Length: 476
Ligand code: URP
Ligand code: ZN
Ligand code: ZN
Image 1 (cartoon, protein in one colour):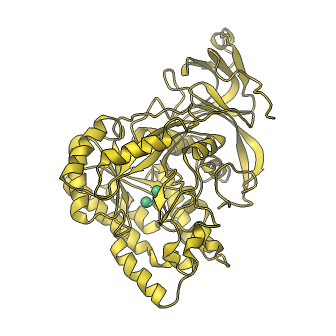
Image 2 (cartoon, protein in one colour):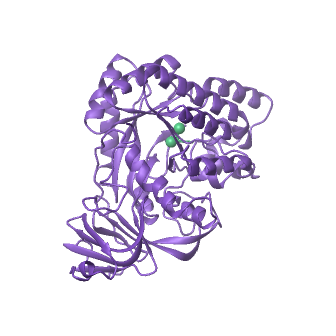
């Protein structure tokens, strides 16, 4: 039997007192007043204004950080890949996200080849509807760029699906050639959409895959070897040039290679509207994991692949210098048993993707503790900028009057060890098994409703609402 929550889940007014409020721009000891699911006011802790607030619910944030809820702009719940589906659906995946302090996800609806965008979008709405613990939006994966789908892009932007993922990888599945990519970019230049690029030269990679398998190199580590850094850099360069020709902005997803960061930095130095995202797995894991024996490396198969450790410093630097702007998870979990195992004896059949939606805020706090980034930069790359990039700001991504009351009380001193035994994602392993983290999410509110209350889950499937998005807010 579960213990009833200590506080009403959704009272009229809530006050959060005594914490250190951290946004992308400020840190201050402030109290927060919430009403009707929105932040109404912030006032200095101990001020007469804050002392005068009364509320049905008071949350004590003494010795805690008060943060905007995390915005994870790259997840794949219930996602078809390699003959199977990612093991978190919208219910389990958004619950796990909430445990980790993320209160908004932007997931990828998929257009199947030969089908309309609308069909794909409807299917993803049906998967998510009434199942989510936190709010969610959609990007659209374009698998088939043609006259019909180009027209549909305009309609989707208007109704709040304002970003489109294209793949230079995965020939025969999601792959688009340069002509199709250029046409989609031209369309997005006209309709305000943002093209998100999976930048790897999939045609060349497939040749290397075939050659590796012919030579008997079938273990998971060869996934990393054939997906060469140069082929990520080359595709990143090509995507940037195509976006220039189209006069369109570009967002490159899951950047992992130092050489790709250099391409983005060079483009940004020229003043081009080019953006980059990386993910915790590239910051904390490496090809050493892919090389783990007894097929354990399969747990770390994702694309772009994990890189040698030496690449991590350039990713951290890119995050500090703003050559990379966003950290998302690319959460796409597949169980080791029964799913990753599909690729025993042939690494190219291992479903690509890793679990992580629950750990992003903690891993990035660990990066603060270790001195890679500041506290405000943590909030910028995990909350504010993803919200701005994908047209959700200031409803999401900050703590300010008028914003949704998506709030995290974070205990910066708590110690935890990540493990499959304690995580909430629906997957049978942890990519971070045994990793020690300083800091832990304590309490989470989504639109003023408690989802996590002092490490007790009090959320519910169906609380999360679909959020239509505006266009990218980082363009002049
Ligand atoms: O390996 C990955 N990243 N799987 C999810 C699909 C994608 O390319 O983002
Ligand atoms: Zn991708
Ligand atoms: Zn992805």
